[in-house]
Image (tube, rainbow, N blue to C red):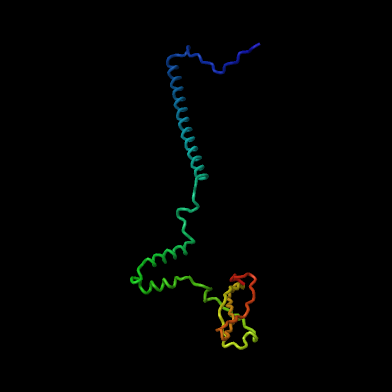
Length: 190
């Protein structure tokens, strides 16, 4: 046996109401509908704001971006700036360069070796007496500079190699003292 579903919405009977009661009832329904319309408009505006926030969050999270910030200062551009200054100085004609500017150009040349303010220790590699026997003269040449690190102290070790010049009928011949092999090859650290 089939049972008919109960209808949830019953239409009220307004036949027994007076005209004034009907008007007040209509005004109440109009105010309720107006309130619902404003609530729906507010909800729609809120949903639009939330959707815009989500869209902005997606753009900020997944869009292409740079790690550079707008007010970020450049920290490591000294070398680039110096090379740019050198290039600009090179473009200036030589006769218009002042003497001071020419000197700064020369001083900007790359300095080879270590700072002269560091402590220096001279180590000499000498020829043996047998190797020096009969030499016309002997002299030292700087072969290498190494940087030795002692905690809170840096020393530049200058390695000087003694060389002997032998004169013969075929010309001069130079013999150098043998340098000890460095465990790190051509590395400047000890």
